[in-house]
Length: 211
Image 1 (cartoon, one colour):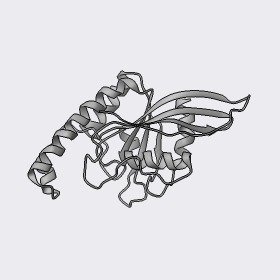
Image 2 (cartoon, rainbow, N blue to C red):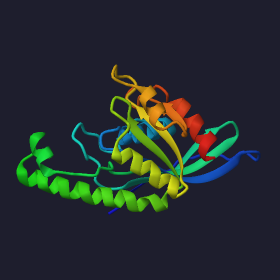
Image 3 (cartoon, rainbow, N blue to C red):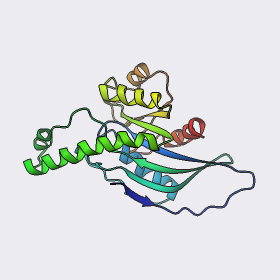
Image 4 (cartoon, rainbow, N blue to C red):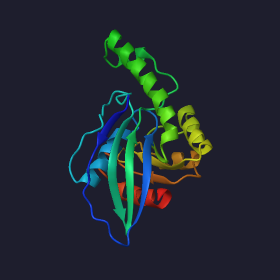
C-alpha cells in the first residue's frame, strides 16, 4: 500500500524560469536516516516543521513506500517540480529475533519482520517509478556491504541518476573517506539531517545532477 501525502505549495512562475519535473526516491539501508532527510527537505521547502515520515531508533520503522507530491525547489532561475518518495530500508536478511533483542514481544517482532520484508520488496519494485535517487548511507558505518553494492549496481543497470548522501556527519565516527573509496564514481554529499548541515549543498547538487 502506498501512503500518498499531498502538499500544496503556492508559487508564481517567472517568464524566464526553467522548470523540470522529477520523481525523487530516497533509498538505502535501514537506519541510514532516509526519513529524517525527507522531513528536513519538507521543512526547508514548506518553511514549517513537519513529521510526515516516521523516525525511530529501531530498524525498519518505515515499512511502506510514502510519497509527497507537488513540491517545488528553486535555484538561480530554475524550478524543480518534484515528488519525494521515502522507501523502506533495503536489507538482505530480516530476522524477527533481532527485533525481540531490541525489546519487542515475539508476536510483534514477527509481524514487524513480515512487514519489513514486504517493504523491501515494495522498495525494489518502486525503482522503476523514480527518475532519480538519493542513496542515503550512514557515514559511521562500513559502506562496503552487499546491500549498498547491489543497490547502486541496480540503479546503474536501470540507468537511474543518483547522488550518494553521506548522513550523520555530526557524529565523531563519521568517515567520508571510506565512502569515497568504495564509490568514487558518484556525486557524494556529506550531510547531517539532524542539524541541517550540508543540506544546501545537497540541494545545489540535486539541481546539478538531476535538472
